[in-house]
Image (cartoon, rainbow, N blue to C red; front, top):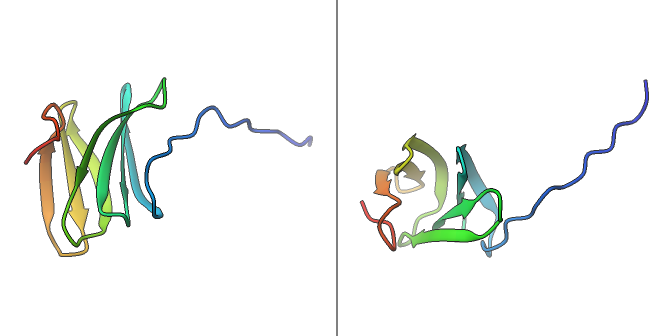
Length: 91
């Protein structure tokens, strides 16, 4: 059995602490971090297209409800639903 090399396609840079959650949905991806931000990325270009910071909470889980809404959980035992069409996206 031969060795298979996997090439990195793209990096998504923007968080300044460790990434704790990632979810994809079609052409976009959401990421959450210990830096208390949730970021939305264009998967193809790697560009950040949205960002939201929550106060004093680490994002621990993230998922898409549908194309326009993400669900986010944080260490303060809160679950939030965000509309990513808003700038910055809002609950």
